[in-house]
Length: 226
Image (cartoon, rainbow, N blue to C red; front, side, top):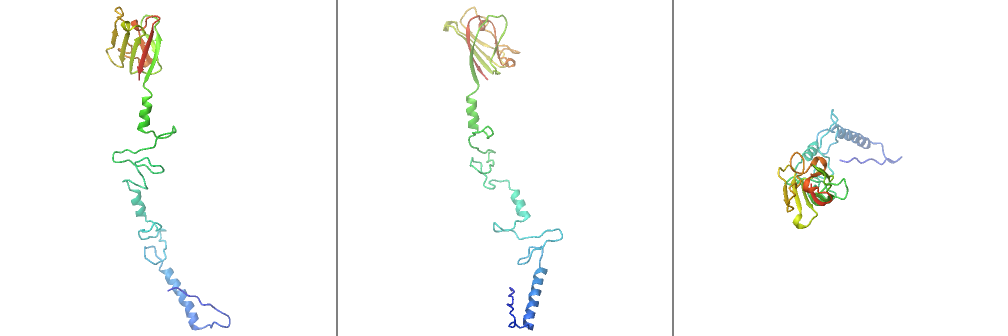
């Protein structure tokens, strides 16, 4: 029961047993409320810390109720999505979680520090991988290195002649056989590419040629796939 104070007035309010007992009862009631304070989760009591500085509360229901350690621990242990609005879709301002296939999406990158999408990587790959150029034969004996600045995986070279005298050589890394096509009769030295065996020469950042692929003054076209 709530305590109602007496409005004391000079020469009007009597100093009577009733008024004095009211004061005593108010003091006693306040002491009772304080004395009933507890660290247990007892309804309608004042909370008091125990010897370890702790006090308990009932399980929260409303969003602004006090949270229990068990409530926090249970939430922290959640591993199934979604958590805090997380999604595997590329939704702005959300936490990302993996879908059933272990994947999640991101937006298209616009800065160097952004995560790249598969589509972006595939598009970049499509812009690379092939280099073309020319060189002019110098007629030197033995192998001649043609530098391309990249380590080739496959090379195609053709001489700049009429179709009946074209020279073409296809070289593949680690391939033992070099495929050569020639209608020039005497061009038996179709010029195997040189590494440890026939094929491109990754150690030089290019490839090597000889014989029919290094005739002095002749312009040769090459295409390198890397």
